Amino acid sequence: MKQQLKQTISLLLVGFFLLLAGKADAHHPDQSYLYLRIYKNAIGGRFEMTAKDMNKAMGLNMPDRLTMEIVQPHLETIYTYLKSRSDFKSDTGEQYTVRFVEPTVLNLKEMEDFVRFHFEMDGVKEVPDNLEIFYDVLFDKDPLHRGMLIIEYNWKLGIVDNEAMFSNVYSPGNTQQTLSLADASIWKGFVALVKLGIWHIWIGLDHILFIVALILPAVVRRKKEDVPLSLSTAQDGWQPVERFKPAFFYILKIITFFTIAHSITLALAALDIINLPSWLVESIIAFSIALAALHNIKPLIKGKEWLIAFGFGLFHGFGFASVLGEKGLSGDYLVPSLLGFNLGVEIGQVLIICMIFPVLFLIRRLKIYPAIIKYGSMALILIALYWFVERAFGIELAWGAYLGL
Image (cartoon, rainbow, N blue to C red; front, side):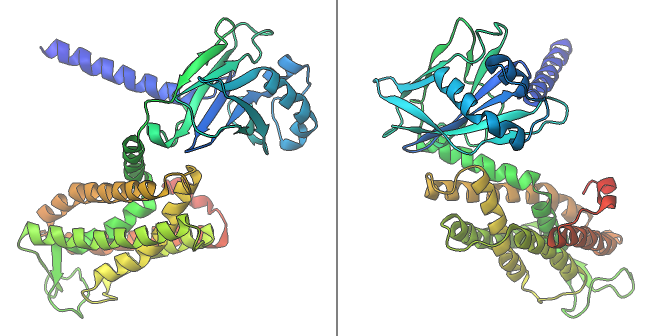
């Protein structure tokens, strides 16, 4: 039994590292890529190729390291080639034509650069259940070359930010394939946005630190409202809470006000009613951490922590809006996208609280706990001010790299 358990764990570890390796090799030098973005009644996407492959396919002479100035003179030749080597139509016979828009260059440090040839499909009145795709790029010159089809975005399939999971693989003997789009539902898209909201909270260090600043004093109460937390054991200004449940629900209430606030501004930004510069939003988010931490040392709004959460939650919402914009979610299925993302953020926050709060509750009676609050809050203030300077003035402070900031 133990041997089987060890084998199972070993297989899981191997699979995990293979998965990481597969994601790391999402761009491989012997592959070209076709990305698709499936919207409600429209389809867009892009071709991606290296200079080496374009030189081989079209007889060009471009260097491995690319800029748009290098690519620009060859655009018409490349566009003509890609159109002649690809074809898109529905399973019922509707023919779609590719219309190229502004290209971009993807610079990869340890690999060749890729050029992204973005396009929109004309003729799409309704997204078909099946898309017939012909792809014959470079196969006549390199039989080992492979074309990788990736659905980067399809809300109803539950795909919102995919760059590594291949749907179809094209080869010299397999240039015509069918891409199924029928297994789609609004529920899948909604669940995908919930997951995106959870993930965004878990990878957003500034949002996590804001939650930490709010949760640190949640297991203690000030004896006098005008007495700041002290390290003195003789004249401390705090006392531990007696019961878990009221304290836990109190911090949940504060975080819920944070969610309500960022939901409001996220909707306003997504509807393009209010838009603020990203540097200003990110700077205020950093400042919110510092202010929430300072409140732990000396009360700024007595007994009104929910006001801090609500006030700065408004600015965190503008930060979340930029995430949805990057995923292409500003217009397609907007209402369920907002609901799903906000629900995911709330779930992510509650999970963080559920991990941290019980630990704090267990140690709340220790004499060192005032030090944890005071010096922990001071550390949060320093980190927040570091971020504020970088974001507000557009500079990169060298010493922050050594601290993992």
